[in-house]
Image (cartoon, rainbow, N blue to C red; front, side, top):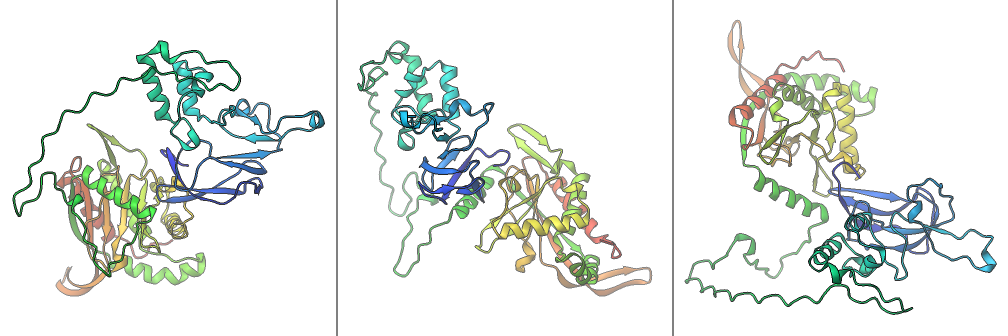
Length: 453
């Protein structure tokens, strides 16, 4: 699922219970952050059980489905201890191998409960026996014991160890007794002082813009946010709460780059079968600027500044749905200009086709967004956390400019663009943020029109 991913949302089941599934055939889809991925079966078999429903959030390591399989499983398989037989052998089928249920979790007890590896590890560390574990009430799907359930049980168990480990009645069919001692009712909350009504024309106590009532009038259309839009909203609010944003702006003359691209674009398309855009050039010189000012390639961890060794450039891509995603070019400093052209085109294409992998949108250390695509000349982009800066490149426009020559100054037509640099004022002051964008502009202006690619 990618580095740092700890959970995923189950977005769609692709198979129903009872369906035949081939090895490597997709069973369900999950979403991590803004990327959807299909999860294939590692064995052929029949889908016997779904343990989660669409929309559920699943922790990495939890079992999502049980597949009955006749596939041979190696004896040294790490999961061998957790295999369970789904059909008992009878006198008539002793010579036939009963199908196995391929699962990563503990075997199913009589009541049909599963335990995740995390729950089992906590139980082992805390010395909780299997019988005792079976008696813990579960709040998860189908009564499964969650991490919170077992941690709460451990806390109660430490308060009343004698009662928590009470023996289980061994009478067949008898229900297991409750293990925890009766809890004393919680002390009543002290009465809260009534909030006096606000004077006429003033907001009531506790008023915030977030809880201001929205008035829906006839003809208004209510549009539910999709999952990606909710994530974008959450990330943007978190970033503004985390980083004090400051912006610096520089105008850059990119006439040489425009002329170069106009000269080579047709031959490049014929030779490589794809277009060449300005974005790879911008990223190429952005990497050079980061090497000149490595303290822009940092992250904040409390009172510590982590200077990142790798230069991983995030590039914002607008999707057909209107949403935004930021795939990451890992180790961008290892690419040639041609390599960046190929990488940028590949990531942009797969982003729009929803074919990115989860680890292709994480790990960025600095980002760039091309707002000029939409005709905007400047902007103040929000920093993608935990990065501390982002560069916005505006539209390239023909502008009258003063051109200095040995024979004197004259007015000419030049291609110019505005660079907008947003940075985190906790660790990036105006000098660093301003010098960084100025150096970036100088690199762009010094581009050699005769560059070969």
